[in-house]
Structure formats: structure tokens, C-alpha cells
Image 1: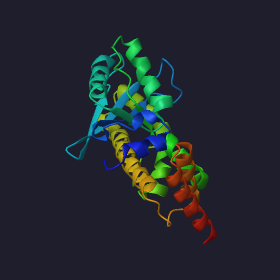
Image 2: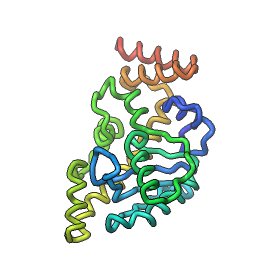
Image 3: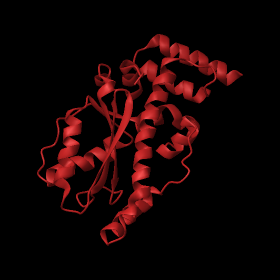
Image 4: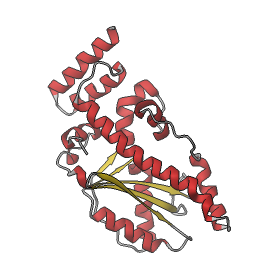
Length: 239
């Protein structure tokens, strides 16, 4: 919540985010029946997160059976309509196009478009030079310093849901619910960390990360900030 929207706009390379009320942002993440997308792929779990009086609140909407998407989609639409912007990780390329398709196929009116902050793009611009791998779980470990003690592999999630549809106990979905909730918490933590690190130049940061912030600032025309990060990059590279 302490992130400066003007700096978030620099991170996202999206001027539309500069005036956003971040207290009304909506984090979202889906778990699906496949990773390829397309009209045959269902979002069987939609995780939503927002701040209520400074406390992160999480709501998870589970599809009990295929063909019963209407109530879930309408609930998602209501949350989006109340939000100032969407925050996701690869949501621009995967989660949101999938949800938009489900709205159309189920004849549920899609909510009005909202500015969309995709933190995958931000993380890639800042950390890929150093980390190479920018999957959310990897960013959690290498940037946020958090390692999940237990976590279901994303590739296994569709089969867990299919087993549930075939009659497995509802408790078999618990690891998927936990995975989804962890993703939402990670989104909030990553936004906070990126907001802090672009706001305050720290010589202790890795110079490759500092260079990423310098390039983003230069592209946005924030010359003073770009020069500050560039100088810190040089100092870090020569130490």
C-alpha cells in the first residue's frame, strides 16, 4: 500500500497507472484445467485479493462442476467493477484472456476494462539479468527471501481437479487452494518490494538489479532517478 503509483507506472511502463488509487487494487490469480488456454480450458479456481483497512483479504471462488461457471464469473465481475486496477503475474497473457473468454462463452457480461499491472513484466525488466528464471516461486525465493515449505507443482494442478471431479475427497484440493493463496500473498509482497526499491536507491542492491531500475527510469524520462541508479550500478560493479 505504500507504493507510489507514479513509480508503479514507471515499473509497468504504463502511464495509466500513475493516478491509480492502490488502496482499491485487486490481485487475482487463476488455477486452470490446462496451461495452453483456448476455449476448452476452464478456470476452476479464481483467487482474489484486496486490502480492507490495511489488511490483505483473500477470497477464493471454486467451480464445483463444469457448466456452473455463471455465479463464479458474476462474483469475479463484481470484484473487478469495484477495483481501481488489476494486479497479476502473467495475467495479461494468460489469466485475463482466459477469463474474458469464459465470460463470452457463458454469456455473462464482462466487467469494464481496468488498468492492469502485470508484475511478471516488472520482475523480468528488473531481475532477469541477474536471475534468468522469473517464475513467481523463484522470485519469492531469490527476491522476497521466502521459500514455500510445501507446494504442489503447477503442472499437477489440472489432474488434482480432475480427480476431484471423478469423486475424490474435497480435501485433495487443499494443496491447490494453498498454492493459489500463496501466489496472491506473493503478488502483494512483490509489489511492495518493487515499490520500495525503485523509491530509494540502495548501494547494497545487486548492480544488475540497479541497472534494471536505471533503464526503466530513463525510459520514463525520470532523468534524475535514472542517473542515481546508474551511478549506484557503477559503484556496485566496481566494488
